[in-house]
Image 1 (spheres, rainbow, N blue to C red):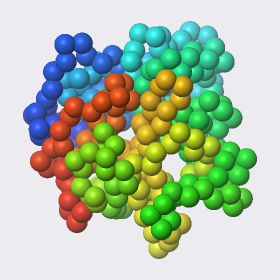
Image 2 (cartoon, helix red, strand yellow; image 1 turned 120 degrees about the vertical axis):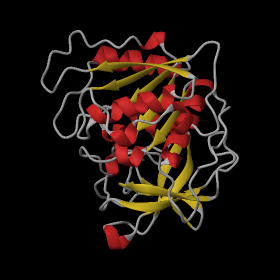
Image 3 (tube, rainbow, N blue to C red; image 1 turned 135 degrees about the vertical axis):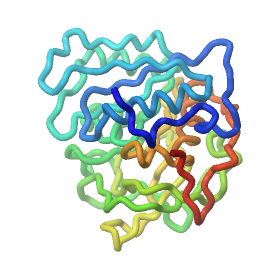
Image 4 (cartoon, one colour; image 1 turned 180 degrees about the vertical axis):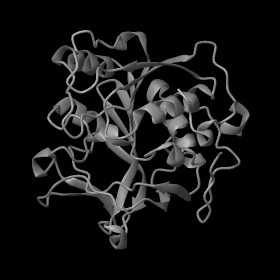
Amino acid sequence: MKIPRACLFLAGTLFAAGTLSAATPIRTLIIDGQNNHDWKKTTPVLKQILESTGLFQVDVVTSPPKGGDFSTFRPEFAKYRLVVGNYNEFPTGDKWPEDVKTAFERFIDNGGGFVSYHAADNAFPEWPAYNLMIGIGGWLGRDEKSGPYWYFKDNKLVSDTTPGRAGNHGARTPFVVVTREPKHPIMRGLPEKWMHASDELYSRMRGPGKNMIVLATGWSDPANRGTGHDEPMLMALTYGKGRIFHTTLGHDPAAMACVGFITTLQRGAEWAATGKVTMKVPKDFPAADKESVRQ
């Protein structure tokens, strides 16, 4: 598979602070195969971003296509410390078999890590455990029955039980990401504000919001079909003994080239897998008024 040139990050370029080594790499599984986004392009970028740190050894399991035979789709979660979700059945794709869902719940409940990447939070609106894991989600029929809207107001996280559909974004544009939990391991050392490269800014996200820490937000501009709220962009959650890093960022390889996306994905994945973050903030991390993109 040919990876777009913008995604061909050399190891020394991708992580400016230098690659790290681990005696035992974090075994990681990316699951893709169905998505309303181009998973064939984004999965190789996710894999390269993680493996470039020297901390992760990444495998990929691709589901059958829409309407395919799921009888042999049995990801071996127990072999891994971390799962990265790049799957959703939007708009009319396939749900996972019940025994796969049960195995995934057991994996997280027993201490496995999970990264919900971008449109993975569209998936499985009728799966209660999954929605507890991701905290909030959008689209696929989510409404007030799925839980309240969540956003920041007056610098505080609020829940809003107003009825209505879940899931919205305007046209792609750069936007400022605001750190809300600077002492959390994922966010420690990051600037208070940084400019994210052109991307979709998710809004009107609903869900149970339990055991959820909103790490960073982005302002949803009403002039761009937005809500006028500071919407959650990065979240840390727990489910049983497991940890979940939820990023709404990274619509495509161009958005994934943002150093802010790269850094938070790497640090969020390490935290989800281990509970700690050892990776330093790179020198080319974006400023509040300036994007930083690696070509």
